Amino acid sequence: MDILGWSLVAVLFLVGMAGAIYPILPGALAIYGAFFVYGLFFGWSEFGFWFWTIQTLVVVVIFVADYAAGVIGVKKFGGGRASVWGSTIGLIVGPFVIPAFGIVLGPFLGAVLGELLVGTKPVPAMKAGLGAVVGLFTSTVAKFVLQAGMIVVFAVWVWMV
Image (cartoon, rainbow, N blue to C red; front, side):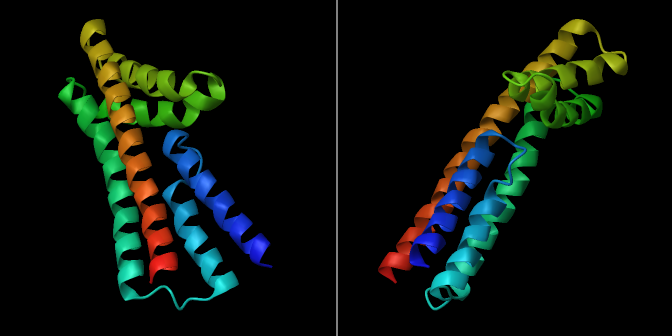
């Protein structure tokens, strides 16, 4: 049973880290779920109030930062509400419509189309699209670092405490 437990924890960690890059995957929630799997297989004694508080706060920060980075990126490059909505829709739909490049082109095209639909001229609309891509990359780096931190805290907690 130990092998099964550690295998499930490892798979959830991998899915979580992949989710930092591919937003369709559950990311931080998969990593958070790995803690529950560990508890079910190996016991809850290693985890206490501070472990759950730290990990829960990191998950909240990840969700807020993920959204905020996209919005800030679009806004810094002159985009408005339409480009924020367009980039969000493009982020979700893009990987399915354009499998290899949709993860980047989706938010870009969504932001551009959103701006064009509300009457923005093409050059400012393209700038908003660039802002969506900058926000996406910023968000991806932040999620990757924070989620890796969640795994490190888990490892330290399990093996050191």
